[in-house]
Image 1 (spheres, rainbow, N blue to C red):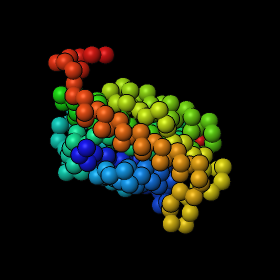
Image 2: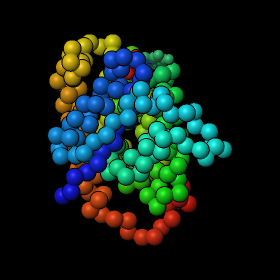
Image 3: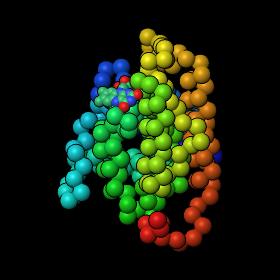
Image 4: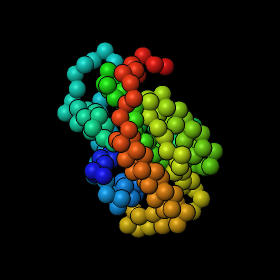
Length: 202
Ligand SMILES: Cc1cc2nc3c(=O)[nH]c(=O)nc-3n(C[C@H](O)[C@H](O)[C@H](O)COP(=O)(O)O)c2cc1C
């Protein structure tokens, strides 16, 4: 099996962003399973201009991000819960991926997507994970059965080195990474069955 390429993006611009630490941990777990990985963190995402559908111009950062997603075999996306949904920073990055709409492998098609949410309360974790799953479905992606959620008010999750200290969260991140890697191999072993026009399917 050749090495899968897994892209992670998300987090916030806040130093010590917990959602970004989750994505880092997920990518590290994918790397441990033999993947090549690439992270687009909160600082990177904050350089992406506000997506404008009428403007075809792209910055170098926008192009680099879109190309990485185009090439990847699987993804991990991390967001905080902001007012009961995903953050604008992460949504802006998702909206930019409209550039993949005309691809043969449209948007996130045939790619597993591990989803991670950090919130200041249990309600925020659940509704934001559910909202993000709907978005990934809309973009033809395959959210992994295991989602990672943390409630930042429920106790220390990370240690001083930014690694996951909570054993249950660590086990969930590892299990999700395994699903991302296994499904990425499965999709690569099973090319599209027909010439069905996925861009028109709805
Ligand atoms: C603008 C804003 C809106 C937020 N809205 C919610 C919310 O609706 N529900 C919730 O549980 N937490 C909410 N939070 C708390 C964050 O989700 C929480 O602190 C999260 O862990 C921050 O992620 P980060 O560490 O990656 O920055 C909000 C925080 C901010 C700044």
